[in-house]
Amino acid sequence: MESSHAHRKDEHVSLAQKYYNAAHTVDEFDQVRIIHRSFPEKSIDDISLQTCLNKNLILDTPFYIEAMTGGSDKTEQLNRQLAFLAAKHHLAMASGSQSIALNDANAISSFKIIREENPTGIIFANLSAETSVTRANQAIEMLAANALELHVNVAQELTMPEGSRTFRWLNNIEKLVNQLTVPIIVKEVGFGMDKQTLQQLVDVGVKYVNVSGRGGTNFAQIENRRNHDNQFDDLKSWGQTTPESLLEAQQFNQKLTIFASGGISSPVDVIKSGILGANAVGVAGYFLHVLMTDGIDALDTVLSNWETEVQRLLLLCGVNKFQELPSVPYVLSAELNNYTKQRGLK
Ligand code: FNR
Image (tube, rainbow, N blue to C red; front, side):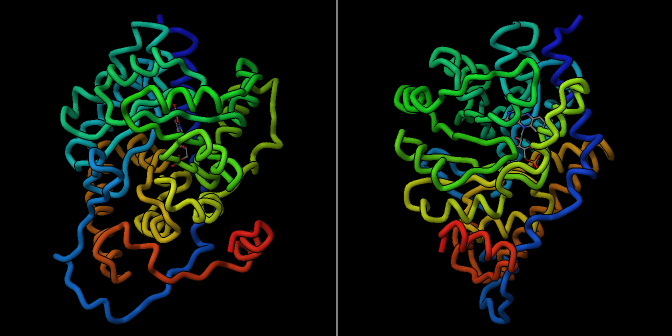
């Protein structure tokens, strides 16, 4: 008999899938237009997909499988399939939150499978920003992880009747950054970040941030569906979109390595994220949707296509590698331009 915590993990996955289409009615990346130029003066063989986050963290592909799940029998099966494909396509992969496995030994196998299926790949462990150093080390060890994502999810917790109501995280994040030996990536869960948040992270010594913006999986909606008696509907459109968050982050490009996620559902979204300053791009809901709707072979094909298309798009943009994308000119929609002006971003 699985715990109620394990049941919640199953519900997150099934509700993310159920509301996938409703959550993706608008592509926020349509508000960014890449300027086409006719003379790249290079060939496809000049283009590398590798992206270097630090000397020990080099991704073979700029997009990766973002944090989702683990903790139950069903989610173990999903993690097995995702990790198998991560290994096959040389994609980094983030685990879902491992706190359930630190509290219940029965849940450990559903996370360990991520490393078993992908012995040499890049894997990110995942815990809440309130975790202790000891638990963080246990989570890293469980996966022989190359980095640790610390998720910050105030809006999600507040939509959950059983969620936290106290959020004092910055001192703890500082302690974790100082005491852990792997890179720490502080990560939102689909509500985005602004420049003040990023400055607060810089001030406590954080070097890696995933802005995870609005525009894809919507945890306010998912938690509302789990708790019919306790809805917090106002949060459905809360937060900064991923393009807005990346624009907020541009002034930190010397101090922070920025990851994008939130609503990434095409190779062009990956490229636009790079143009706005992301060093790597995580995809959660879209890959889960393909896997659950059409199966592992379909996701396998999607991943192959994305690799080919991202390489072609880099050529089309006239750059040799992903991290050269910020040199590519772009135009913002009137709405997004208005956002940058009001926020004093340019
Ligand atoms: C998530 N996400 C997430 N994030 C995290 O840091 N820890 C977690 O345990 C989870 N769990 C989780 C479950 C499911 C089913 C989904 C779809 C997502 C959030 C995820 O990593 C990402 O930040 C957001 O989903 C936005 O990206 P997408 O889904 O729009 O690509």
